[in-house]
Image (tube, rainbow over all chains, first blue to last red; front, side):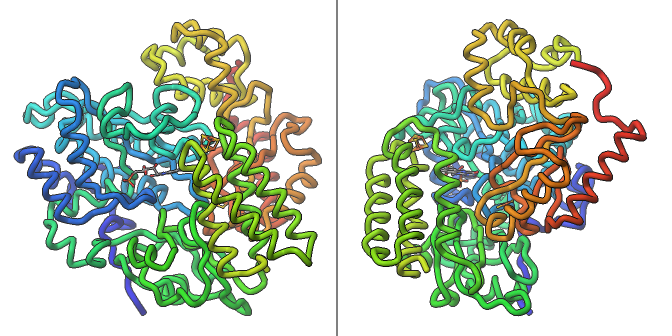
Length: 413
Length: 163
Ligand SMILES: Cc1cc2nc3c(=O)[nH]c(=O)nc-3n(C[C@H](O)[C@H](O)[C@H](O)COP(=O)(O)O)c2cc1C
Ligand code: SF4
Ligand code: FES
């Protein structure tokens, strides 16, 4: 049987998540100590060389984002690091696993990033429902402070940095980085227009590095073992490991950290144990609601950003939602579109009206056997129109599941 | 509930608004934010009541109406939906004899629908307060209800002070 390759989750089950001493005994904060003696530029070059890409969904180069944030607005007094722990993409629960089991890992990554871009303050924005994640992260921060790893003049290095937790309160849209910053400032979660990106004008108008929990949790190992080591795992364009979260009627749903490029078949039929008794694989939805449907023809495709993109699919957050032959594609797509309609903030017309329009078309498709093909065409057009005209990425997300559902399952049957 | 004590734990800055609202709501035995509290928050942060209301109304976790002491958040997102969340909802409603968003007569429970709670591997799933419940069936749900009722009877109470 294939084995996991745990890098981000290397301490899982081996250390007490509430013990900083356990973390330190397992080699924790060595990477941070190492970067205290390095120039910011050298740290960033190392991250760029590793090829690490953002694990929050978009897959943007983490090192490049660090570089942009460190170079933006030289006269700005403040620079921030924000950890996106709003995890709300249906089917995704990797950040919860990290925060509940080894909070120091992503916090150390955050400290390294802060040192690299010379940030003054950091925030972890955790979704409000993740009570245990909040508690464990807070305990970790308190312990760091007690050990002099956080606050003024850290370990006598002259570097000062502090981290606070901000809680979300039940809004999927607040996971979008610019909306998250609005919420973090204590406002309603209405998106800001991009550009400017957070790297130029983020929190309170200052350069801000926004990274996902898993992205930050990759950093300590990269610093300790080097970019070359990191590149020995995964694929050329998607190096390293990734935590995939598998749900649906498989024998062992859950989280699995494997090298990028591992095939969907290995993940579903090996790690997750294959389909439950009497069930036959039909489809998988990759990347959550803002993701893409695939059928059995994609089982041997490697799960990497580019490998999937070439085939019109997405890796997204790493969610793999499995469907069996007894499940209806219409039902799944309808549930996704209901989710989007519920989470639309209503600020712009294409998404506010469009997301309701899609649901009406879905009803017509269900009730109207004869014109299904034409109605699916209209569904696709409507989603394309929303993609072109919506104000923020949420309204541009509907097209992904719609296009792939129609493509792989004509008539949504 | 001592509002001032809770406010005093946070710097009086707007970016603490949501954390403050959470603390106040958690300290309220009925899980809600009454107008008096929101007025105090507005005063503390030197902002208007309507600005505070704007935030409270935007976020689904906040309520301005009394709710049950235990909020049942039943996930209705795609995976839980496909794995049977509607049947689970019917069971909760039946076992508690109440409807969505209507607190039970004893004030112990409210049922709410929620989007993905990040516990999709045990779908259909829900959270009750801070606890996670998965593979929902009538048995799982009725066990949860009787355990909480029992706990409340024996006096192991989450919040004793009144807001
Ligand atoms: C509607 C929407 C929701 C999102 N939710 C999350 C989320 O919960 N967590 C996350 O890390 N990124 C989320 N993102 C992506 C963020 O905007 C951003 O790309 C990410 O935080 C960048 O971090 P990374 O480079 O480390 O991936 C979301 C994006 C959109 C459009
Ligand atoms: S696309 Fe949707 S979520 Fe984004 S601003 Fe428009 S209405 Fe709001
Ligand atoms: S879809 Fe229900 S917990 Fe994720």
